Image (tube, rainbow, N blue to C red):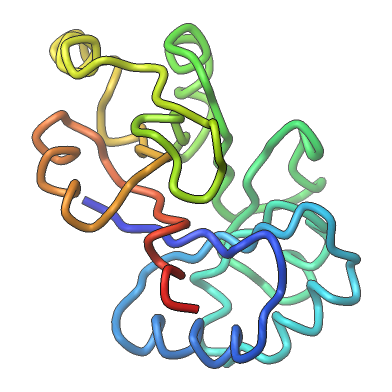
Length: 179
């Protein structure tokens, strides 16, 4: 099962240091998501990350930076609905319903489905799926290696998510809990 960390929405002191440490410790993929940030701030953070880790970074905004720095990929969302022209990296997308997963997952390298559990970082963003529904979706092949769990994902839930057939887990709140 792949593990992806998603950055906190706001910049914080020593963020690049921690990102470099997570990568050095084996983190495969980091989604850089700062919805209200300016492009220059995004670029400064990228520049503070060691270049050998650029192939592990996926952007949620300012996709031109993915081309400029040869980053791993882009993640589509309501703010950014198309990858850049001639982009050859990974393309993923945020999805929030079973119908979206059924209709769209084949178009992407992977998709996130959320919220699987009650969110740690977003107050009031509660799970949309019962355990019975998740098991049924797994048995039907809706949840598979291309579907990554997001929302309330903590390290102690990884075995459960793997048993449900998720191909990966996207961790936000639990990754930065002590920052």
